[in-house]
Length: 150
Image: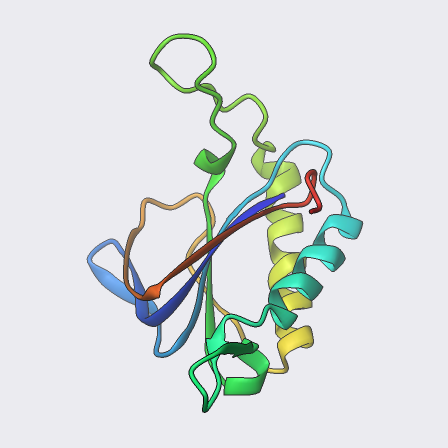
C-alpha cells in the first residue's frame, strides 16, 4: 500500500462536473493498493498517518497531528501510484491490485482511518475519473509505502 500524504489548506474532488467531497485544513491522501496488501498494511498505515506530526504548533514547529488540529481528511484511490516505468515510456500497472481486491481494502482503510482520527473521512469514488484540486500547505508532501517501513 502506498500513500502520498499532502498537508492542505483545502482540497476537493469533482466527478462528472459535480463536487462530491471537499475539506478545509487537513490531509489529502492519495492511496494506491498493491496486490498482496492486507489488513495489517491498513492498520500500520492508518496508525502512521493519524499520528503523523506535520502540522504547526504555536511555536511554528511541525509537532501536531491531524487529530491534534481537528483537521479534515480526504482519501482518493489512485492505482497509478504503483506504476512501473522500468521498461519503455508507457507505465505498467501490473502491481496495482485488481478492483475486486482493491475496493474492499480501500473501504477498510477509510473506515480504519476514520476510527483512528475520530471523524468521518471524505472520499472520492473508487475507479471514477476524478478531478482533484488542492492547496498544498507548506508545501508538505510525504510518501509512505507499507512495503518499505522506514
